[in-house]
Image (cartoon, rainbow, N blue to C red; front, side, top):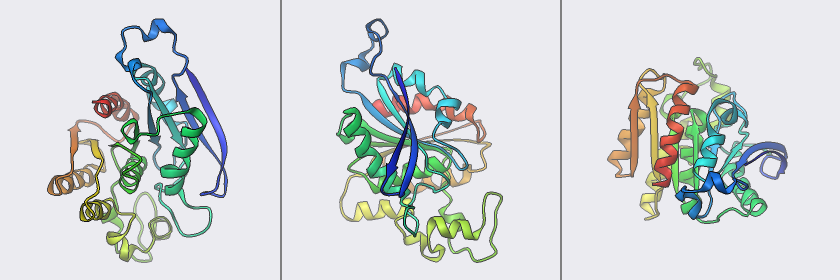
Length: 264
């Protein structure tokens, strides 16, 4: 198995950026014997980190390396800074384009990975869970399925907020710079609910979504509300709620079940 740290220039970000990658391309025959996952093309999973995180978080905090080998899956872990993986105003801030288009094209071309959406998935935790859901819905022809763990689905928390607003994570200036005009956020392409309504309006396919969140997680109510929205809109969703907090114990525990769901 190869583990890469790749520094690459991004046109979307107008700078060098880093991503980590696990590629089970040289697994010995004895380790592949009896494993049906090696009787098919390698799948690709883009895993997004959370707020204040980095591209090596999944390598350090989870069993991503072992699972890449077990399930014959390339795992790509980009750096999203604190962008929520959205395109913000101003040159060099197109994180949504970078993750959903530029990086996908780069790893497919460089590592000869499958170009089929049925073989391409996106997932993440917290801010990265939001980013995975939003990116997967914005690029439904690229990503076949979506995983969100403890997703920071905070659109309704920050919409219509004004100067002076602040919560334990950030303030009005940050949210405005990341999400855009907060008075128009609900009907914005930065809102996953809006994207789902638009996809339905134009009779386009919507990727199935896997959600898991701990009952002691401070984002549990936001995840419950989005799950209910998906049910009301008849969007295919696998929702799991179980004891747990906003931590690596929970995310690592659900990484393998989510991968099994992706492959199912």
